[in-house]
Amino acid sequence: MQQDISNTEIVSRQAFQEELDYKATDLYWLKNEHLSVAITNYGARIVALLLKDKEGKETDVVTGFDSLQKYLEADEDYQGAIVGRYANRIAKGKFHLNGNEYTVATNNAPNHLHGGLKGFSNVVWEVEDSSERQLKLSYFSGDGEEGYPGSLYVTVMYSLENGDLHIRFSGTTDKTTIVNLTNHAYFNLNGQGTSSILDHQLQINADRYTPVDATSIPTGELAPVAGTPFDFRSLKTIGADIKKEDEQLQFGQGYDHNFVLNKPAENDMTLAATAIGDGSGIKLEVLTTEPGLQLYSGNFLKGKHTIKYNLKDEKNYAFCLETQHFPDSPNQEAFPSTVLNPGEQYSTETIFRFSIA
Image (cartoon, rainbow, N blue to C red):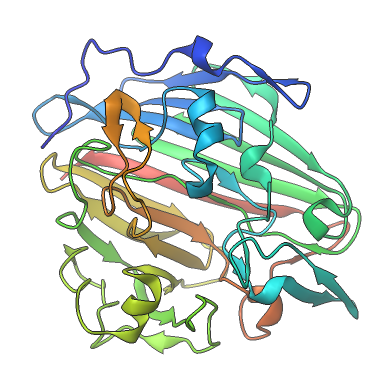
């Protein structure tokens, strides 16, 4: 079922104009002839993303809420947010740097998840620059915040370029630390909240993935996807293999796994994934400089929250394609490093490219 939202008020800017931690929150629209994107500086979140489907109907493909208050009430799902200082999991909330052990919150027991108890998803970002085509936001994370070493200054730049939404991260630190940022947008290419995403087609440019233990921490193996439910090297529906008897699918209650992207060289911009809405014909291509991609099939959505258009966030009604470094990299020497030293520049880019299949 496609979602026609023409002549519908999507979200009220006023519903996002509050004050948290003595900082003003707001809603910002980026628009061009192809896309309209709503972003709030609370968690630097994508609130809505609109484009036309194969029949010319305006469709909102990102799950979210229509007020700041609803985000505050449902923050456990990280809807549309920038997550950090470390996206994904760190085993048992511990890691070592320069001979020192650091402890961070185990908010996804027994592990650390998406930056901790508050993380970057639940803070108010500063607005550095705003126009119709781009929005630059920044956040200063002090030394010791959430247990992480070093003061970290990060920026995220959202920009529209034709049918692409670019997300560019940068950051610097005054002390050796770890950094792994991602955007946690939930997509339904038929229109958010309208149908299951299990009939969406998906292709992931990865010959290997990182299997996990029962607590979703990588075992360290880079396992071939061939012959497994994790083989998305050619287009298939997300639900094609999701109910197969497979220990990894049982651990994640579906897909919640990192894929090792095929890259000709480190930091190259690479096509990571392609998804197509079965009803809308909307095609999403994800390109990134990151080495990994976390596929999450919305397994833990429970239908308990009312999202935009008075719909529900039902199980498997949205999926995430989180571009990232691998989970638990600080404790896995063979994984690409997430260490950032003073004098170095953290820099990554992800592109969400939209068209009609």
